[in-house]
Image (tube, rainbow, N blue to C red; front, side, top):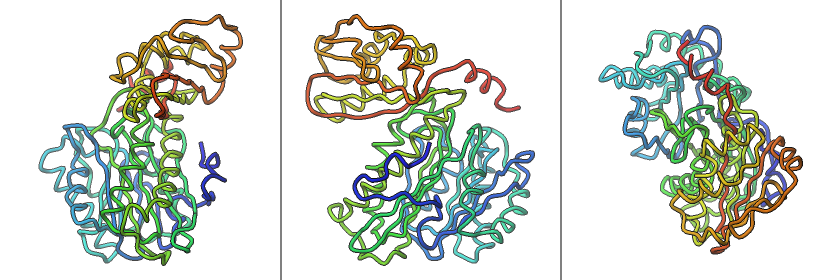
Length: 409
C-alpha cells in the first residue's frame, strides 16, 4: 500500500525517500544480533536539532523506551531516533529504564550530539531484558552507514511480524517554499485505535513551532492512526514521533491557522501509513475501509466507523465473503454513537444491502464478488447529520491465530 492514491489532491505530490525525503535527514538500518538475520536496529538523524513531538500508547503498562522518550520530549526538541526491533524492553523494571537511557547515550556518543536530543523506541517480545551489549556494537556501525539512501534499510529494521515496509512522503508549498514530509511505520498485530501496536516516525524540513507541531500531530493522528484496528489489542510500546528541522527555509509556522497546509499534508502521509498498517494486519488478505456518513457529530462518526472496523464478526464475515450486514449495524449500535437505527442505510461497495434499518433483496453473487475485492468498502449512512469519518481494518483469518500462537518462536 503506497501513497500514490493521494497524489493530485490538495497540491500534494508523491516523492520517494520515506523519512529521508525531507532535506537534512539521513537513516540506516542493520542487524545487530537481536534477531537471527533480519535487520533489527534503525537510526534516523537530522543534520541540525529539530522541533519534535510525540504520541504514545494509552496502555497503563508502558515500556521503558516510551517513558524515556516521553521525558525527553517535554522540551520539544530532538535530533535523532534510535529504534530496535526483536525486543520490546517492556516489563523489565529499573534495568529497562537504564537500558533505554543507555541506548540514547551510546547513540549520542556515536553521533557527537547531546544525549537529551536522542529519542528511543523498541518493539518485540515483552518481558525480556534488552541485550545492550549488542546495541553498543551495532549503533556505531549504523552511525557510519547513515545516508539519505538508508531510508528503506531503516524501514525494514523496525519491522516485527510485518510482511512489507511502510513508507510515504509528499512535497507541497508552504509559505512560498517547497516543503517535504516523510514517514515510515511498522505495525501488523495488536492494532487498535488511540495508539495501536505500532511505531511511526515522521520527518519534515518545515520550520514550525514545537507547540504547533504537537497540535498538528494530534490532528493528523486522530484521522489516521486512531482510526485503524486489526485485533482490538493495544501494546506497551506504541509511539508516533515527528521531527521538524526547518531546512526548507520557510517562515516559521507559529499558529494553527498558518499551519493548515502543513496539517493537511501531514494527515495525508499519516493516513497512507495507517492504511498500510491495517492492510498488513497479521494473516490478513484484504483491507476493510469503513465509511460512516450522516452522523450527528464527528465524534459519533468516528465511534461508529471504528466499531465496525474493529468488529471480529464483521472481519470474519469479510474473510468468508459473507454479506452479513446485520453485523455492521450491530457494531454501530454498541459503539456509543448516537443515531436512529430505523434510518440507516448500508452499502457493500456500491451495492445497497439495507435501507432504513431493514434488509433489502440483493444479488448474493454480486455481494460475494464485492467482498473479494481489496479494499472492501463498507458504507454506513446514519441519516442523522452531516459528519463523516473513515476507519480501516482487515479481515480476520486462520493465519492470525497461527502467527500469534507461536510469536516468541
